[in-house]
Length: 631
Image (cartoon, rainbow, N blue to C red; front, side, top):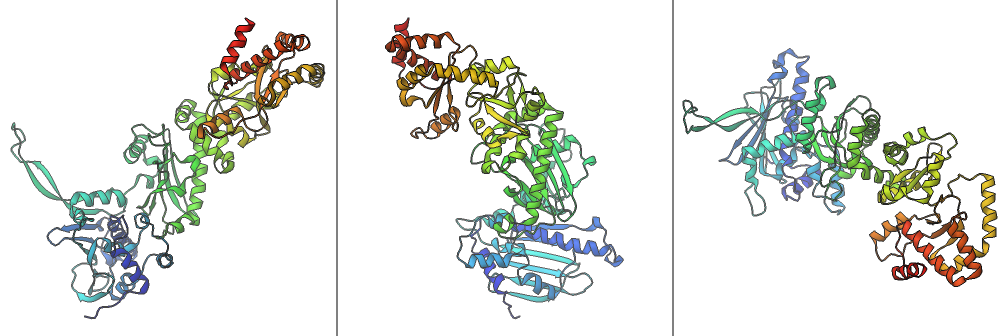
């Protein structure tokens, strides 16, 4: 019998398989079973119009058997089968689209990605990752002749007539011998095969059956003190066949949704929301997404892997398909199943798949809508979720220079100084007095410290609310959003509060002109320690305050200092003074009569302003000595 040669593309791919340069050898079983399922699909479809098929849907099955003595695994189906020409076509060339492009990329000398095979199917050839000889026996429906295809790898294959009682295909894989680095014998173990079926092929629509060994109590010994056990073998269906996401929503209970989530995504707590969607159209898919109640222990570490499980017609293709989720929603768990994805070997091809992008965009909208619905209809549950994922939502707002800010801004909550609870920007703006121009916010380490800011006294007197932002990331949120609706964000410490009338502004200008000598003296005394000294009408009953100039805030300064203690990144300091406070009046007198004493007062006021802003003072000893001296 003459040996035939593979086509050049197939030979190159087989070389890669046989040399075992990939780490995910286990997917060979997924690929062979998927091919068997495809073959059954074809015959099941023909049975709809051809009564001679003689099989109902319940008659179709995939059988798996192991011969440990001969180190072989057989996958048998009762599908459409192949004749000689189809064997040439299907087994002598690369059957999966995209494989030729993959081969060309490899020929260019690019580094191989060891995860390629573990992420994407390569069809029939994956068998050569674990087998040194593969035999395919097939009889096509409608034919009495059967053929046997045999190959030991890249050197070629033979095809010969044989006998086969039933229609369908048997794929027999004789495993390679074990080496120091590879344990191929594990694939001969029943438990290993069961695990692989459960992991990759659980939702194949036809039963996958295998004889498994079990134990039971021997008859007549169950009631004795020491019952005896015996082993027996039984044909068992290894896959569940119907995935929960393929069912109609009305047919799935809340308990079933939650149990599936906890079992598949290893959480002990029920999710706060479930998104079950089915889309038919140019791209058809089904998705089942879960929003966790709390962050997993490794969520904020580099070990955490974002992404959804990606299935194609019930066959898992990727464990974590990151391209299906934007970073802002990286906490979402779930599955996506589509028969329309053009799944290729190359990871880069998948990343640029048009259908995949379409699905990802739709899912992003679904996730946002579900979170907004949760916020509006069950605030307590949303706040529980927010407690674990607030930081993620905020960083998601900032990522890529605010590319997702429109998506994220309605999901953020901040503490309201007036309501004394978490509110959204929508809540805040809806409750604003008609005359209020801005969304006021204050950044700092704690709500208690922010409530004591001098500017809070003035805003509270006006009846205006202030949002307290107490996380490091919060300092960047207003600069990224800039406005919500038509209302601009305004820092209570950094900018003009916009409260003064024209008359009040004119009055402050007149006071500034009259106090020019005092202001100049303060600038001269403090030198480069402050960028500016000015009078302010926003300090209420407080004499002094330190605020940042436009640009970097004090919170940003502290953040960058923690990132790099040696970096010299500081916000410019602006010293504000209350011209109506008695202390300022005494300072003016001192400047006119005793500039030595005035300089000491300036240093004390400067240190107090730093302390109120939660900033370090340069010389604590000098400050305490000055206080003692005045006392």
